[in-house]
Amino acid sequence: MSLPTRPETDPEACVISTHGLTHSYGRRVVVENLHLQVRSGTITGFLGPNGAGKTTTISLLLGLLKASAGSTEVLGLPPGDPKALAQIGALVESPALYDHLTGLENLEITRLMRDLPWAEVDRVLGLVHLAQDARRPVREYSLGMRQRLGVALALMGQPRLLILDEPTNGLDPSGILDMRELIRRLPLETGASVFLSSHMLAEVEQVAQDLVVIHRGRLRYQGPTEQLGAREQTELLVRVGDPAQAQKVLAREGFACQERDGKVVIQAALDEAPRIAACLVAGGCDLYELSPLKANLEARFLALLEAP
Image 1 (cartoon, rainbow, N blue to C red):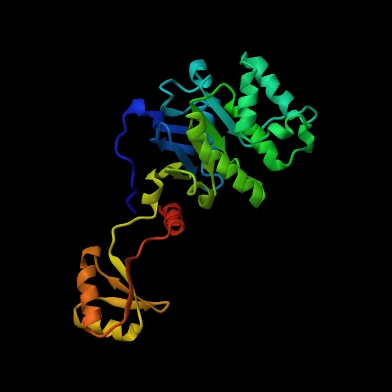
Image 2: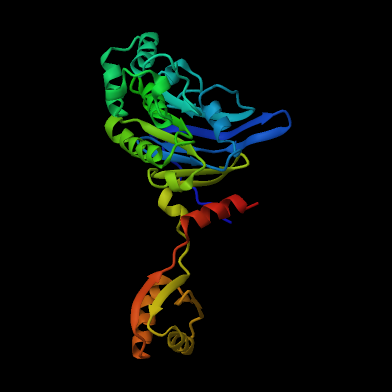
């Protein structure tokens, strides 16, 4: 299967750029020859099944691990560079919180350590909608509230890049909805680019403009979210009153077709649609729908993972 990738992007327009990024644990290669170009100002979904190498890649981007090979720039600087880290907010796996302290006190510790103004605490509490619960002990927080507090901590200092690793993991449907809406708002309200790691395609596709898909440490797709579900259009779907009659009419005109779930699928390009419609109407068929048949996004995603 050919893998669509984004055309070369101006490095200055990227918040993350890697070339041949590789990391091994002994003989086991967990990230192999990754070439990533993550655009500034977007939400980019970083997708792959558990064990695909997502968390290892994030650790390499943050300078927590040293690459075995390849080069990486984050905000135009090497991973782990103090100037880059000062502009990055990260929530990797579960947030590290002091349960006996309030949400406000957890944020205050970070504010003091980073010598940030007091107004920064109020700002991030407002962004994650925790202002009313700020004075409650964190041990009383739901899992969703704890995750939102973790995002608030990552937002301290107004980072240019926000890296979120599985922020909806373990959340109930209400918590997932809250987190989804929060992530969707962040680039608009803060100007930060968001690099969102997840194994849940259904969640990521609702918020991300771009997708990066990896499996077994290798890049399988990189590009706009909507293009993952697209393909060269070679099939058209027709809904008619009498599918059997439609098949006879189309066969006489030389079109290969078959019935699926009460509809007729035709092997034809989109520019054949006007002629197909005219043939069906002339053949006495009641035509209710004629549309391109698109690949299901989830099916395409799974196909990428199954590719050798």
